[in-house]
Length: 341
Image (tube, rainbow, N blue to C red):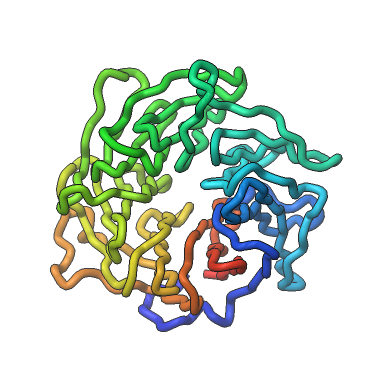
């Protein structure tokens, strides 16, 4: 990855897939496509404001520089998916989706089949919609979900049972991320980032609160290459707030070069100081946090992005591939673009 600031250098390395539907949820497979050893593979969730939606699986041929749909692994989905994730282990055939509840899908040689439907509606008959979830890399039997009902639920997906459910915030919980096998964090409409340890469920640690009262925090990304750092975004804000969990309350950096609201963030899977953000200004920006960020001495003028990509439309989603760290995927309208970085 180059280190100097450049204007739209990725445009010549962008490859587009046109979906028949608007795309929101998106996930890279941790493994390569079955037909080509070097192919990135993606699950794409439609965003149609009705019950009937789709999840499509596509792969990208790096030699032919073209996408290939895998219709046998695509399936109908109830409501739009708020998030999709493949099982963290490369050889697992499982894909998880969230909407009205958490679902696990088996993607096998005979196509896609529902494996389990996980919800908490047995007593009330109502399941509060899920805003997001995260699959625990270090403990893959665990998936944590976040919900508009103020709770985070930790599922044991091998048993198909709830391990624990916590009232995590005072308002809707919008995102959740694992840091360690028993430690996760969440963000909420109450404007806080909180860390929870399953070994001490009675307590949580607030590491950041929005400086503007009643300003929701929408997205959370925990840096898997350096667990000291996480990043969050606020509603209707052009800023990405970078936090050091050892020094709560005060951000170590605020990335403020977007011209409109930030919608998505993703840390580089292999480089601890690189992060990508995308937003309503149609830009995907890749940032390199300076070493000074660790000491809390970032210049008041802020940080400029090292790479800039302009999509020409509001970007709703981005993912950075762990299996193929040279590739970032962004989604806008009915298009998905792979960017080689």
